Length: 270
Length: 331
Ligand code: SF4
Image 1 (spheres, rainbow over the protein chains, first blue to last red):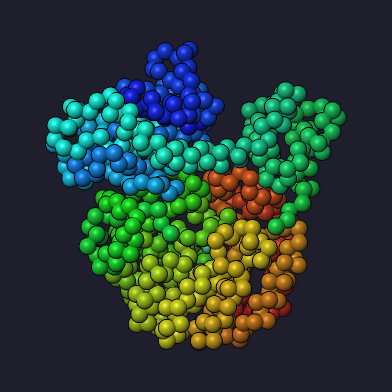
Image 2: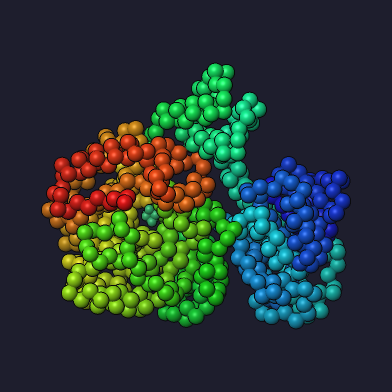
């Protein structure tokens, strides 16, 4: 599952439209939209809101180690042109003096930048810095659920002069995001690829479910079964159920033993 | 080659670092305080990082030269290792670095003068005895040579100490800087091999056996001392024929009389490393077939292991004298 955390409804609108996400009406704490593999939450502004919304998405289920997290929004900078989009290579929580480093393990069609997350809108920009209000809160929360390769922040520069920050209209924000949907879609695509790559390793789920429905397994036998099943599918694509005569196996102990024996008989070929 | 360059801030003006930063000017350059901010932190996935690692340029402060692990020695009494680099551009599925580190980024320690001093201090401690220094423990010694210029700096260091032997362990063909120099008696370039079918499946991004063998022969012809490392030995149902073919191929082409050393060691890993690696690659046959855990070390089941080692040892000793053979024991 790819989880998108967006502060404002205006920032979210083009993304919801692009991926045809549907409002999940049974969720009330935040507006949440979803499809089969993408969810979007409108968090509201600020670090705390972003962190809470991230935790909320994790809490409603569907999150595994292979889930990815992307924060999309507008930001300010004095040295990057309005309308440009950047991927964060460093995120700093200015108040806590905490740094986070997203791992850049895919190529993107945009620049990368350091982002400083501040508590209130800045009017005095330091050269070279991108300012936002959510990235650090989002990042520190998402790190509880996934690794830093799967957590990223994309920021579209909406203002770069002192005072500009008050003049950004809602329609202007929608338009900025719309114009950068190509880069957003590229990053979303890369993250979905990584999710699929990690998820492809989970072979044997069906067999495990079947075995659990037929045998009572203690906790340590469950672990043993997991290992045997993982090793099995590392050696062959043929289901062990096709090779074991399950009906003749009366106990879980006999089942695990038979699996081990069959496993040791499998050919090892490079 | 790299996804980004992280540099410890005090090193940004170091001449060796400036050159590399300039060469990769198109990549994100991210100043950091200490390499530990990025490397080996929690919430990192080695496998995903390996798809596009970053280069972290750092300076190593402590423990620059350490006692080498037991199984690393070539018969010498004093064995040390030092690592100018952590991690490797190649991707061997059996490599213990995947189990040891959470990060696949390359950490390059650019403070060579400090390493040279630490090496010098160790050599002084054993003034009248020979000692061995291994540089390929946490990395491939030569694979990143165009960036690290390791050979150019460290060979002159060892040329001043005849009683200290430097081993460069590699699967790379980056030998130009060696071919350009006068061979040194106290430097051994050790090449690692597995049979071609195994190499193709498990040694991702590594030059082919043919290319490695050519590099080794070139060095030998130039007068360099070379060694062979068949470590790890990998089991499959036709291992006997595979290793017979590999040995025949290699020993029919190298000058056996000029070989410095040959060592052999079975696939083995500390249990924690093995578990980390299997978690990263659950569908990998290497971690699933004929494996057993003995006292915290994971290797092949005892009968398979001893047959594999005995057979390969017998095959090997048909070609080389026992005097240059060094088995790597698990004990
Ligand atoms: S060449 Fe050596 S260091 Fe590099 S990945 Fe392979 S085993 Fe590891």
